[in-house]
Amino acid sequence: MSDSKPGPSDPQSAPLPPSLIAVWREWVAKGEGAWSEVVTQWMRDERVGPTLARQVDEGRILHRLYVEAAQAGLGLANLPSRTDLEMLDERLGRVEDGLASVAAALYRLRDALAAQGVPGAALPRAKRDRKPPQAPAPHAESPPKPVRKANAPAPQPVRPARSSARRTDR
Figure (spheres, rainbow, N blue to C red):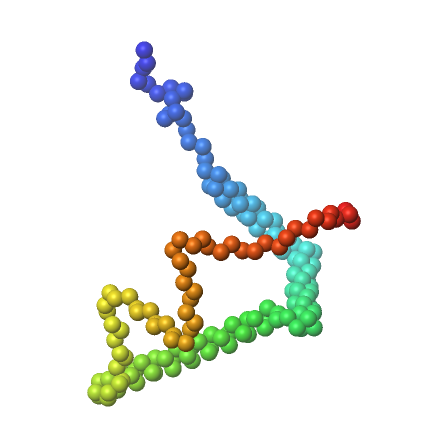
């Protein structure tokens, strides 16, 4: 005898557990809000605000000095720094843009020549057939392969003879 009323042991009536991601997001948001309030109060304080601002500026200066020292060290080791790679990236971007403009100009020139009826201006069309490409003919200069008789066994590789002397240096 089972009743149709859902009870506490019924898996369909059990409340779903909260999503761990949702709980984590809520916790992070509350933590950020609390830190924001604390830092805002510190910055408003006349004793803490200027000191904190000065330390942030000193941190920026130290970071800049570290970057310069790292670049110098990498330069001595003949390795590129981040700045070098960023400059190279920008330069390659300009080269790619220039190449794209040249390619576009060539396409426009080809189309204009094809519109005027200049022979050879249009690109040749590739054949659209289902035949596989033919294998090149063998060269007449290559030596013929040796022919083995059908009943003859395949030659076996020659093994070096074993030495009967035993190693004594073990």
